[in-house]
View 1 (cartoon, one colour):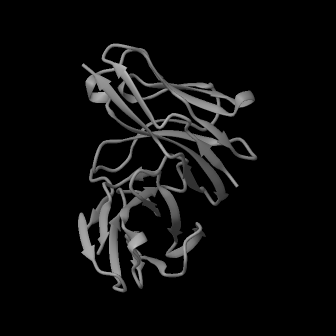
View 2: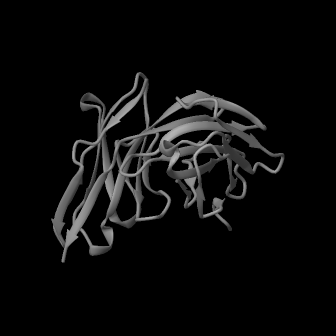
View 3: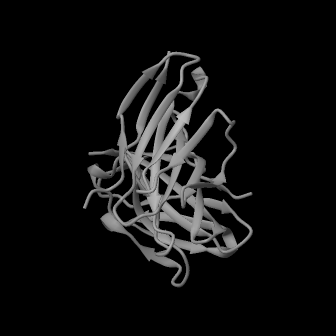
Length: 113
Length: 116
């Protein structure tokens, strides 16, 4: 049973560019949440998707957007990249009907030059 | 808004010694509480969770945590630390938002080093 998978593992971009990160949830999960973890910090909640809509959003600018597909997979898009966007981006999935914890992927390490 | 405080940035213990990592939370309702562990370059692995019921919860790898509502705490303990426990530990509170979903707010983490 595959867990949460994220791609790519690492990514290097330059300021002003745009990036798309991808996440496949654990089998049986319908909800995807995205978190940003800066170096030396705890993860910070970006937003959450279920039923193909953004349901909750943390304190992140509109440059951060997402999408959820009918198969529950999700994308995180970041536009106009800033140096401060360098971080580990974590995807977590859960099943809204089971009241169980979120399961995390290994993340995408994004470096902005 | 909910928040989590982990007062200890870095803790060093000897292998075989006991361990307690502190966590204090702020949340207006009954919280969902979690401890996750993260090895370098990896994602987060769930150690244990508290949703309701017994305030002493058992987790994987011999860890346990106790929910104390009066102290707004959820400290993580292990009676005997192994070298493989060296990692970063995150406490989190889950804010329920309805329809079975919640968002996690994490502390800044405690890095655990283990001396052989």
